[in-house]
Image: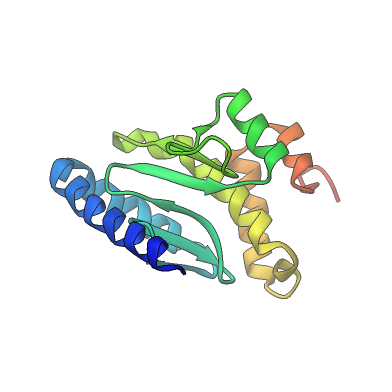
Length: 166
């Protein structure tokens, strides 16, 4: 990381602390949502370099949440564009050209908007590791079928499993 990047990261960490003070009502919900995500197989939590809490599966980022309830998730361009076009997410809050989308969470029920996208990101990032970790594969197959119904988007990820397919 360059000096200017380090300086920017420090600024954003301070901004994150301000967000916590500005949105105290969201902190218990963010903690609750973080606990749910961290209960998924092989998911670890860490501090995101630009503020917030990052979630990683097999050391790959599936997304991060900021203290104002904004979740950012990484997707390749074609998938990102389709997720925004279909209303599942918004463009990244700072730079539209980043390969990230954002979902704003403001109340407890809002997690149902972000959960399918986090699961989709989990599936993509876990990738080849799912063969080595059958419990993670079982988890993601069950959860994606339960929470994500857009088959065209699932096909873009290479996901082909459904309860009725062998």
